Length: 221
Image 1 (spheres, rainbow, N blue to C red):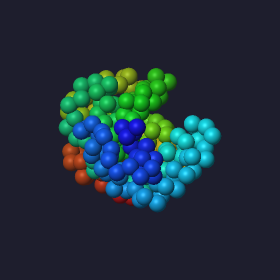
Image 2 (cartoon, one colour):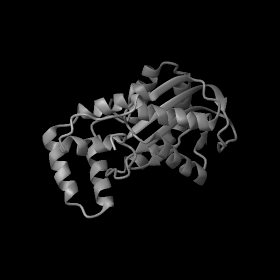
Image 3 (cartoon, rainbow, N blue to C red):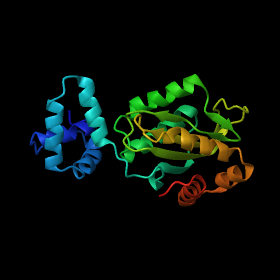
Image 4 (cartoon, helix red, strand yellow):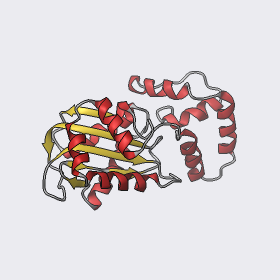
């Protein structure tokens, strides 16, 4: 049960002070526990005990764990000089960056969601860029992850050209402001501009990529 970070609030609410977990899960669990208070966990547990359906419990846990304070952009989500050699490897590397940053606890399931979108239509926008995206309750904090590749890879793009930069947009299912489509539309419009594409592609430093996207997309850091 402790393997899913969302369940920690229940365990704390029950008064447990020892939790067994695998070594790989410890960093994420410690980070989540540091954000919890005993009182809020007890209140959440009381609401959960009043639920009559599993779906209600899942929604309470998802809403409790969702973090709306984090910016869409973060330096930990910008990867340069990636050695990914395929579309599959690139998407996995981006999803892993979300997991490491604590923005999802279910990377495997989230990857399936991204691939379901890819199956509907290719997100290879053209001009060397791809913008895979998803909307899912597996996301803890709305996020933009960027991957710049050492070597272009095939993406079945609209113009038939390989991709060298991938920008993943992932937002929570219950996003009230519909930021998913707003940011996606703004990014797509920007990528139609040759000057924007050229400048972004030439940036080789993660910090500069972060600052440039923040300014051009009007997203605060």
